[in-house]
Amino acid sequence: ELDRYQTGQQMRVFLASISDNGFGVKGNLSLVRDIDGEQRITDLPLAGVSTVCQTIATHKEARFLSVTIPADVQPGRYRVRIDFCNRPFNDMPEMKVSNEIEVI
Figure 1 (cartoon, helix red, strand yellow):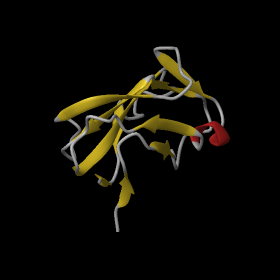
Figure 2: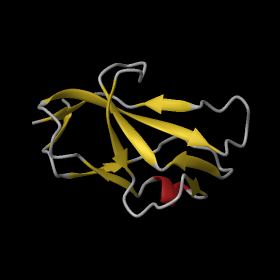
Figure 3: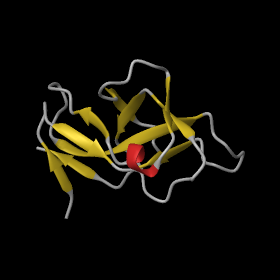
Figure 4: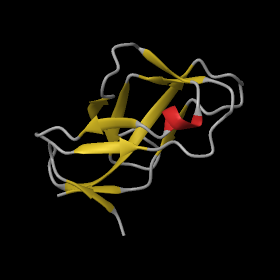
């Protein structure tokens, strides 16, 4: 079953299996159509973040990220792309794409 959201609704983003070493998340996530994260639909600004690279220092911080689904997003199936910055290791991925969500 998909996570379902309405436009204007806040979506909580959980990062699992993360590094114990701090890392950064770029201040805008992206709503995308494809599993590779290349077909960008719109930006999803992280709530309460006013920096280009938000430091995630603890597992708790990685569980309390949120974005709002923009009002102009059409109903459909999407994925959320998150881009990392200040990566502590070269082999840490530059970005990850979520499982599918549905906007209704």
